[in-house]
Image (cartoon, rainbow, N blue to C red; front, side):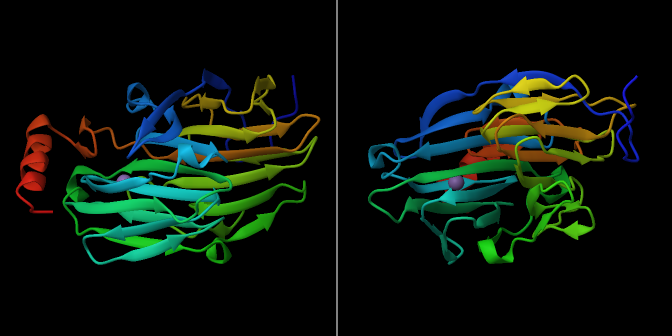
Length: 290
Ligand code: MN
């Protein structure tokens, strides 16, 4: 028997499934890797989508995402490299730069554009979609730019460097706290041979994405390679997350949250509870009611 992990939920979650993602293009032709795809929405409730974009070829990103609508959820964009200009029909404008986060609540409706503000160089980052509970899907839209300097960071005794985008870890509160789904969103830099351990409520769904290095997960040390996502088990007797780096440094996004257990009806950029609500969203958008 191995020594138990020293957290309140002692047994670490193992990898349930490894996902390689699907290369696709979105917006006006931005090439990206869709890591969390629609078939995982129920399993990873409350998370609806995760895209990874990573290219130093401007042809892959220069066209950006011209005006398009959203309703019923939140979009979280985290830039690692590059500059992206946001504009929306509520009059908000912002420039997302390296290390920064944009947290946008689409609520009852927003029309926005996301356009790269660079003609060459590396563009790298993520966009996560977080569902809203039915009671909040028609809330007022909101938007927050969080520059890199405003994202709390800490380094553990094991030398793991953590950017706390949302939620809380080791007593450090992240830049964003949300009710209902209580999302945890961490960018972890784990040095070679290092390990990150964290207790989560056992009913939270959790997954992580490796963007540099190779992760060794759980009690079995199952490997997860660069550009792979690992869905972690959600089981009553297991809460903890345990991720180790092998012989080289590791960078991962760890994302977890409380499931909503509501029905999900999606048509493109609208995510509601029922098909009727999605049809209403399409009608409202076409009638200029966003
Ligand atoms: Mn968008």
